[in-house]
Length: 81
Length: 233
Image (cartoon, rainbow over the protein chains, first blue to last red):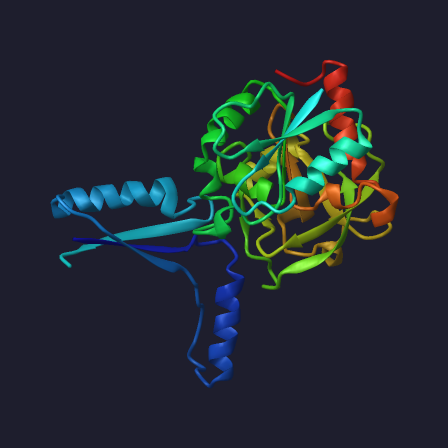
């Protein structure tokens, strides 16, 4: 089983990387681009857990280490493989 | 008085800090290893600059799990003087000893240059001997200080902002802010004032060979505060 954690800059926190990427996309002609936020994805494989347990453990991992909740939000998903 | 300078894997300013304490203050100094489980009875702790654990995940995020950090947290909470410089400041925020977090520099570039610092509160144990402004080089990619509005108001209201980026004349201006830090913040303390985190490196300007030497006053300030019994466990 795999826990996938998405970590993104918290809403209201300046994301200079996102701003730079948005500028890059617009200069390539993607005029429709509004805001871009750059985060990261962390995959964690686990064994011996139900889906529900994996989700709960994944949220604990995210709030204790994988994300810094002062400046980041996270989102946890669980997949079978 | 004896300082302990912690060496994490990836620390690269530990020897500079050791040298400066040894040469510009009356205090003694020794190294502490990240795997140590006690502080060898030191009276103050330095968390030096560098790239602890390769900045993996986030700067300072892994160093806080070093065995020695449990003791550093205990020492700090008991009133022991602790300074975190650059990466050491990041370790202090990640370990919860200081509020807020460091974001990527607003201009996205690594910045290595002298910074003029306005001593925003000259009555702290770490600043009492500092002149109105000091000069300390910055060398960081993630030094944009951020805290939520409530935390920021508390820091300001309680006089816990120790240093702000300023221009050569000591004026705190937007143009003098190198990295986008809120309120030009370059350094803050905890509520008791015994824990200081700062992104600039006072140890890189502590002798005449490297500038005006004004960074030494940060270390001399805490030595005096300790000797006079104003700070310490």
